[in-house]
Image 1 (cartoon, one colour):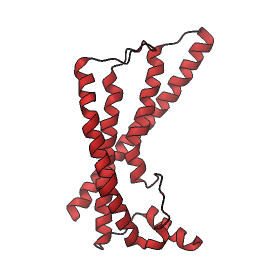
Image 2 (cartoon, one colour; image 1 turned 135 degrees about the vertical axis):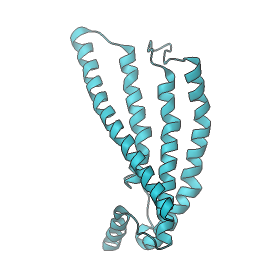
Image 3 (cartoon, one colour; image 1 turned 180 degrees about the vertical axis):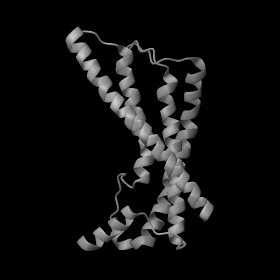
Image 4 (tube, one colour; image 1 turned 45 degrees about the horizontal axis):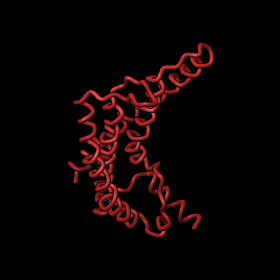
Length: 188
């Protein structure tokens, strides 16, 4: 179990590193949005590529931060049973959810979106359409989909290892889960 927990910690560091980069991207996006607004209002000038870049930053934030959100246990949860299940019961519930739902969905999404990313990378496709003259390469935004789901799947595997460690009595659940259990008992 030790090597698996070390691998889970390495995945955590990968998710945290990606989150740090994306946070800077969010700041860059805010500055880009402000610059676009000033440019349009003050100079009546607009650049399609700048508008398209805003969507790139948004896609990166949503897709690449999902793993970090999952790691921090700040994702949307519907745990009607959490307080009644206890630590082991919640570990079983999470493990089943990760193995039966999260990992298969992530695998399918990586499998289904990687060919489109590779095609746009090799063909030199741009984001230009009838509505936009953007010259940004399409592979950039298309890469966020398989990358985001791959990262989320890795984080899911790390969380599954932690659930198994809890069930084997090797390690307790993360602080956030214990707090959720204790809050449920106090209010329930």
